[in-house]
Length: 492
Image (cartoon, rainbow, N blue to C red; front, side, top):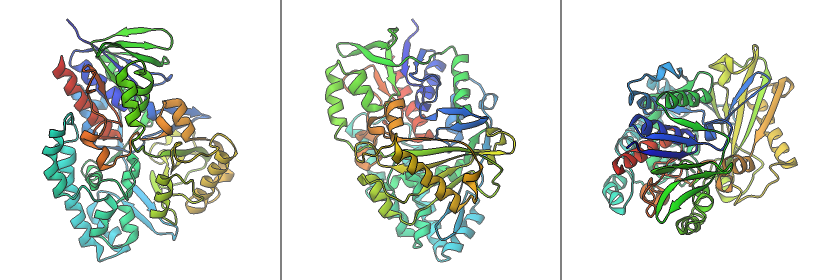
């Protein structure tokens, strides 16, 4: 008999899991609440501009290519990946720029310009990053931590690489220039982690980028999503859009399927959820004792911050603005303390995305597409009128900062603009507290201490995505799909 699976949510994790299951002969249906697949990788088309919601930094292409190779196909038939160089242009308020890439000679020159004595320290940091990459990503990135024994087995490597220290702390032990410390530690913010508290294991991101590069899907991240959907449907998978799941149906301690808000009911031998972790337990499993008890425990966890994103299309081209820019603010630690402590400050650091510099098709001829992203506290820590005047003022301040720092005359050239807030994350994605990255990636909330890829009580209920091991980011959620698929196929 053909086994049937239902995957809740068509984010990157859900799509990657569904492709793996369908490739293995499991008849799989994805049920997605929104009108378009992608989850956090949603997109909008307005006045000829294409705006990706994110994520927009694509790393480790082999983890994606493997999804096609499972059925003997080639990713290139569905997705055109384009290398991005430099990976990021970092900019500080004093006007200093730093081009971050995997061109080692050029990168050492950039390091030397900041602080010549730090070149040797950077080399030592690179060796450290390679080590944690091998131990934390290659060996453990797609392995499910279902029991504490698995954590014990990983402990020697964690001890060897001082996992109890923060990324910023370890970086600071190798380099002395404060700007370089920021340059080598900011990456954790891209997966919801505070560089001052996130485990040093996350220094592996430097090697992921160095080894595999940073890429852009021509047409935007939404084009990568569409390519994954085409692959899934070619394999015979079914995608059901615009029908939110109302509950996960159970009989005793077995999941039997799902029921949607429209009244549609799907039966399955296995159910996996790529939906928000709290939403899955508290709401979709609200009628089962497992749901209510787990939701109470999750409420005591630390959740990652949210994001405030301003999307804007402008007249003209901006050849001096890189595809990815990081505009550091006047404070680093102090700003992070505010974001993770629940203060909405007057200053900010920004990630500026400029996809039309790589793919002019993202904007009408003679125009440019951008978004500017500021990490902000989640809704449980900071109450702000994101939907009202405060949100409008915050967006205006961000545009003013971008104009002042890197794009003179920007606001006079605006064609269209809109913003996306923590409240939108909560409404559109059922994200607990409007969190953009699920659980904060602390050591005590990682691996075994993160949500398990298979529920401990409902034995045929599985989890995939940012809330499970190994965490947020495209490589993370695609790795979680590999771990979860292995469990599901072993359980057949």
